[in-house]
Image (cartoon, rainbow, N blue to C red; front, top):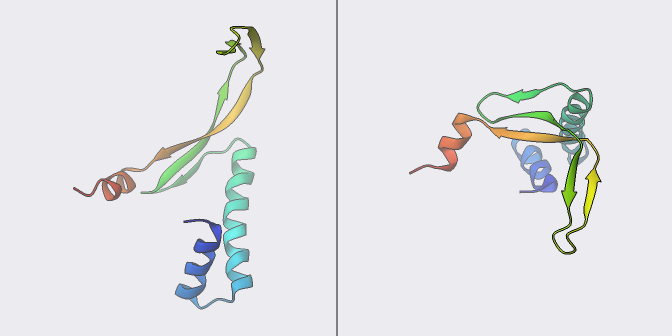
Length: 92
């Protein structure tokens, strides 16, 4: 599923216009992105939690050449799956 599929499903389920459904989906993802940018944790019960994980600077190695280089510190979003989603996906 991609963003346009999500917009189409929302449009059909709620009978919104395509423009309004697109606006809702855009707002949803924008708010999640803004929260993560501010360092907040996003939790959607039963689905997932998303938070920013900070990585310190470290010395990396190019596997092709073997050359060492400093990798600067960085922040990356981290997705943790909720229990209900885990169970639903692994529906044995």
